Amino acid sequence: MSTLGLQKSKPGAERMFSASRVILLVLLIIAIVLPPFLSPYYLYLLTTIMMTALLAASLNFVLGYGGLLQLHHAVFFGVGAYTVALVLTKTSWPFWTAVIAAPIVAGFFALLIGWFCVRLRGLYFGMLTLALGQLVWAVVYKWRSLTGGDDGIHAIPVPDYLASPTSVYYVNLAVLVISLIILYVIVKSPFGLTLVATRDNPVRSQSVGVNIRRHQLAAFVLAGFFAGVSGVLFVLIEQSVSPSLLYWSKSAEILIMCLLGGMAVFMGPTLGAAVLVILSMVVGTYIDYWLLVLGLVLLLLVLFLPQGVLGFLQEKLSGRKTGEGGERDAAS
Amino acid sequence: MNSAALASQLLIGLSRGMLYFVVAAGLTLVFGVLRVINFAHGSLYMLGAFFSFTFATVLAQGQAGFWLALLLAPLAVALISLLIERGLLRFIYQREHLMQMLLTYSLVLIFGDLVKLIWGSQYQSLSLPGILSGSFTLGGVAIPWYNLFLLVMGPLVALGLWLFLDRTRLGKICRATATDREMVDILGVNSTWVFAAVFALGGWLAGLGGALMAPVVNISLGMDANIIIYAFLIVVVGGLGNIWGALISSLIIGVGEAMGALFMPDWAIVLPYVITGILLILRPSGLLKSVW
Image (cartoon, rainbow over all chains, first blue to last red; front, side, top):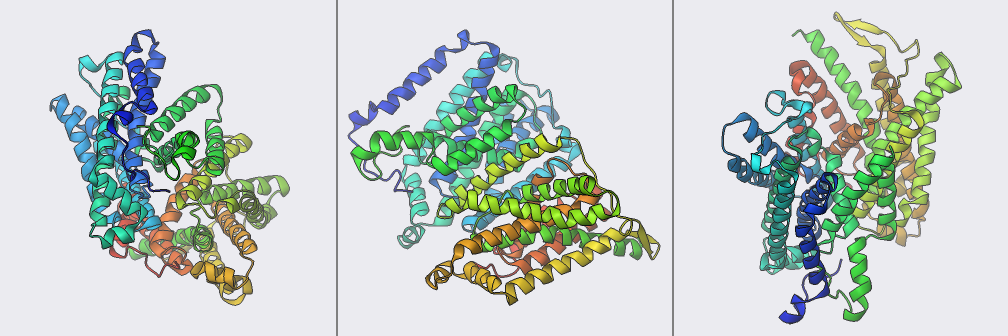
């Protein structure tokens, strides 16, 4: 990994109109005007992509920028989704309390799990996230009276104004754009840069007085929070939850998305999520052995394209001109 | 709650723990020497169980089938492991942990679907040979003979591993590699084949675990995902790469699970995670010293 995000920024005007920003703006405009021309199926596909993209981007915040081996990110996604589901089915509180509570509860779980994990390094960190995450899964799976056990919770009542696919689409789009902007600002903030520094050179960071654990824990909680937001979106789309949302293979899926798009590029996980969701829906409907395809794709990625699709493109486009590092995360 | 029930449950827990140990020992060995987290270890275990089903039903009918399968299935899995190591893993030893992990995860997906393709998605089952079926009575509680068999097999595997690691040249190189790989390279040891051998041995252990488990569970898709998490927990709790730590933590988790089944059956599956969580919070780097 190179010194991502630590280059001096280029003059304002030039950055504002850099090609990648124009592309993103065009994509956003297309996304806004598109829905009337789409069939419900494609609308659903795009909505799912946006929800998943937020989840992947939140993981990449700890994984790519924080350098923390978060192996069980899906837990916070699931906790967020379950919080919405439980508030809406078990209490008579208004809808907005559920929406606000979910990311906060997810963030609280992240604080709890992260509190123990940040004391460890590398693989141990990863293994503990996995163990504690599976603990949460096991509790959700078994606590039948509260969570419905392996049946999950279905027919979650959402307000009427969120019932149509088009409105859910726009909510997802707005939440995704706002969340990505917030995450990007955090990545570029002094906090984000310090986080990257703790990843690239922990010893040096510590010796200049950075409290590494506190930074890592904060990143962990933030990522958990945004995973919780994605969990809210999931409930809006599916109106049901099940324990598989918190199972470790779900986390592995999100990891693959980050890898596929490129972890060193801000928009990488978003692209990865889009590709993977499309692949799973399209390929999955035609053949029974979708996981075999996914496995082969992953295998080839690891062997031949470890920097991900966007990372690869960026290297090709800017690598030679700007020398080492270049503008590695300019595509944002 | 009488003491006989407790004793028999303890025995069942210990035998289950021994089974976990056989699988986890392979994982921790690979961990320690190759420093690769092998997600596919659970898949190798599943392959062991399916191979053992096929060998036992196709090759020989009746009594001999089980024993033949117990011999051949782990070897077949070891062979596959060797191919994986030579064909794929050796290209990514220099990469980050995450990449290595994702590579082995891709194998989980591939093997999962291959097993579905070959054996179908229905349950398979394998019956025990006459000598191991049935049970004996201890203080009024029936204990299956097979559990006793597992209680013998576990220590045998542990003993074999100890002899291998402590008494053979290859074993010494393994331990040295786990402790300080650079030094081993500098001393001129060809670590290439050490890696291959260790990975094959790890696969053999996973296959053996699968073959031993085959007669007592439904042989099915999804058995890989369940065991791999348990094996991870055991390996981490025991101390990464430490085989004796894995033995202790396997027994703790096996017994804990059995006791959970006795005292609070609804929450039995939560217990291993709770135990792991508590142990890791008390001793973040594992019960015994990690090898690296």
